[in-house]
Image (tube, rainbow, N blue to C red; front, top):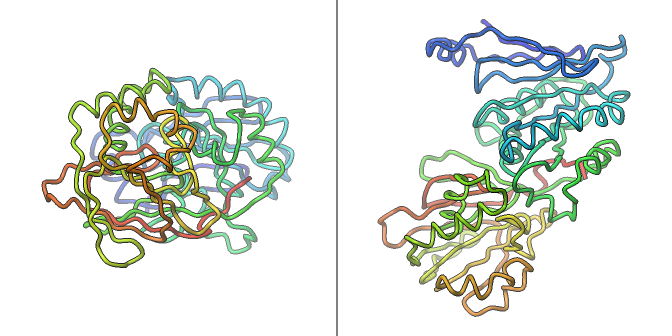
Length: 381
């Protein structure tokens, strides 16, 4: 079977899916690859087989490198209108000085949607110490989904591995809302220090399933209806930074109508929620560029927080926007909150078109079921 491989610090990584490679080649994609020197002892591997083939660097060093563990940094160079790539290049020398004595530093630049998912899965299978998302919540979202495959956690193929692969975060993107829950500053050097300390804790992950049975994972917030539609539009305006969320919300409001939804909490009875403006399911607290939408959510709790906004008009958001940002909106009329292990949501009208997103990524439309996976991933904290 043909394999497409790359090397990182003495470990050989291979993409095993021959049929995907053949399909890619059939579309006229070249299988050639090139290397360019990023820094002394750090090389960047770029493959044109996308999105299946990972891009990882290889560390050229002493013979002891094979005994060191791999840290795989997944970078979206186009994030934040290209700022992520520029900031990452500035960060590399400091990163090497802090980590290269203990670890093999493997860098991977994503080239398009879902690329980070494939890189993460390969890194876990090959026993990486950690996979670290460099960028915003979009990159983190893909890396988290890479920890799973076909509804199950991805397992390492390295028999002597003592620790599971950990998730790490270096916030550099437009939105870094997940980091806010932990009080982490948008400071990449501080994030590197967390990696150097190596402290770990297990965090919960949310999983979304629909009629197709396919699973999709999130680590921050999933949301339905207006906020999800606003996020869908906001993705078109990322070049404006956090202002994109305001633009997206204004555009979403132009065609918005509150909808009657049916929900089922923890496999209980169906309930009708009339005139829903937005329904948010939080594993963590923040979304939309700093809005504390699910203020009681805790990724260590083993549960999710469900916040429902009902019968809101456009002026309600203007008048109560400050409460949404500081997390005090739970005292507002027509806002309710409850904890849940699972929630199913349906559109009563049956017309479809009620948006859902997670971690800022559009996932289509209702109906959906959202559940929590307690302590699903080890995270560097």
